[in-house]
Image (cartoon, rainbow, N blue to C red; front, top):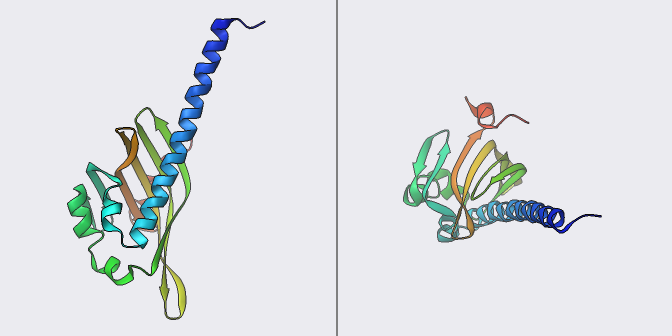
Length: 160
């Protein structure tokens, strides 16, 4: 028969495992919200998903803080030319949670609706770092490098 102490330990372990699963699901939702808000030009909503000390690195530059992301990413010519006609699809994610910090890695594909139909305009590898702020997960850092760009393969962590 299992004693009370063993049951408490097992319950504590199960609670931790459930918390990690809930955190991973919250992070997946956050990434989905990121894509929707970028696609639908909801700039303020998009920026609210980031921490104050955030950074976003692409092959053409690194943007630190929400104001730089607003100007350099959401305000650049490419985004302006495809806004309201694009889909940011982020998939194949691996997520690791450690307390109030987490990381994720995966692919992203951007499609755009042109007159002739939809076309894939960008395929990239991504890493994210997240931080739980006042109980809510936020994006602290994202690196997004187009497939084939120098260094893109090195941003994905090795499989354990």
